[in-house]
Amino acid sequence: MTDCTIQQTRPAATGFSLAALLRNWRARSKVRALYDLDDRMLTDIGVRRDEVIWASHLPLTVNAALELEDAAFRRRRKHRRN
Image (cartoon, rainbow, N blue to C red; front, side):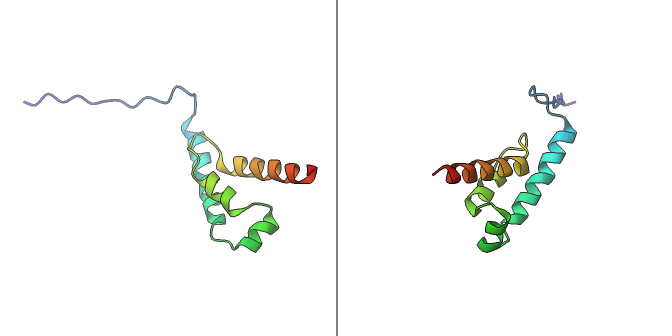
């Protein structure tokens, strides 16, 4: 008989729930859909292509849509100051 050990996967110690990970995964999917838009449409939305790429590579513990919105807001605010 072979001795097999079944390893249990424990939730991350960061306290993220499966629901939060699912929500973040859906948000990342929506962010990645923005990549298919042309640059003019992204400009109308208020984001840049490099911001979309950056946000789509964030870990699932982060809501990519919220981070993208925040990054675009900070960029626009900094641009207004100059």
